Image 1 (cartoon, rainbow, N blue to C red):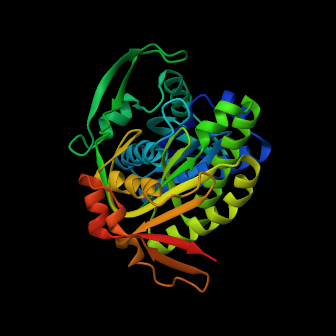
Image 2 (cartoon, rainbow, N blue to C red; image 1 turned 135 degrees about the horizontal axis):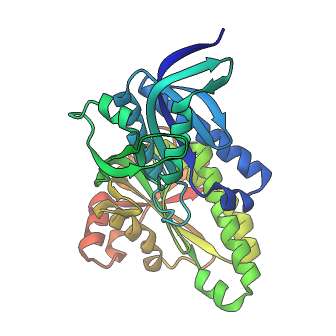
Amino acid sequence: MASYRTTVILKTDIVDSTPRLASQTQAEMGLQRKQHKQFISETAAEHHGLVFQEEGDAYLMEFPSVTDACLAALQMHQNLRFMQTGKGEQRRLAIRAVITVGDILHQGTDTIGMTMSLTARIEKITPADETYLSQAAWLALNQAEVQTSLVGEYDFKGFGEPEKVYKLNQKSGLRVLNDLCIVFADANGFSKLYESCSTDIVEKFLLEYEDLMGVICQKHNGTIRQVNGDMFFITFESADQALSGIKMLYQGWKSVRESYKVGIKIGVHKGSLHVFRSYVFGEDINITTRLTDLSRFFEADRDEIFVVFSGKVKDDINAEGDNIAFQELDSEKIVLDSYNAAVREYGAYRLILG
């Protein structure tokens, strides 16, 4: 039976989804939609919300209070940006969000009412990475918990009076992530590849490289933090996950090495990193890159797979396995500077895979 009910609505929508979808395969579109729906649903549930309607890549959620809806929207923006650290502003996925409150007629899976119309009107003026609120939602909000500012007054079609629209003020501060396994991978010999080969071959190599890293992260709970040319920064929650990911990379790189005569240098360390928007930095990241750079002191071939763990990670590995060994590198061969001194402090161990 149809009935009116006062409802707090949060609607989210992916910005510029049409050109993004045009560049994706059917499988990629399906995966993105599934992952995004899970992300939206889980974040809403953390704040007592529930998805009640889908419109393509847009989701409408119901919350018990405006404050809960605002906190959910803020978390969605923050976590979505955080999950895509390193992708840059042009490549990352962004959403816009709208929060309204009012009487809605619920009839089966359909929802009807002026509140729904107002939500659609406000959505059209909401930019990427922002959450806009109707005046009624703003009045119902706990102002002590969430900060807002007035956007302006708008004459929306179908509404007799101007509507004041507000926005949530977001804090996009620096975040420090502690106790992570940091992996730095650098394709060795890439410069020679792009200088001597056609653009098609270079692009094919980079796509294979990116796909391999993506699969590794998906299977072993890794996160790509930054990509710079042929270099990847990836983090894992544990040393065992990092080791499993690198074993998979080791196996996958064999065919890459045969096809392109390009090796890879990998450093693995454990510590903290600082994240702000698409920036990733910190002393432990610098130490990880120095582990990768140790290949020059130990005469590694250009097309070799050279993997070095710091002692800080090696000591955390629970089970090395029958086909894994670590060879301690002679510290006397390492030319000292501030970060190589830190490498010596932790110890450097080359991973040997059988």
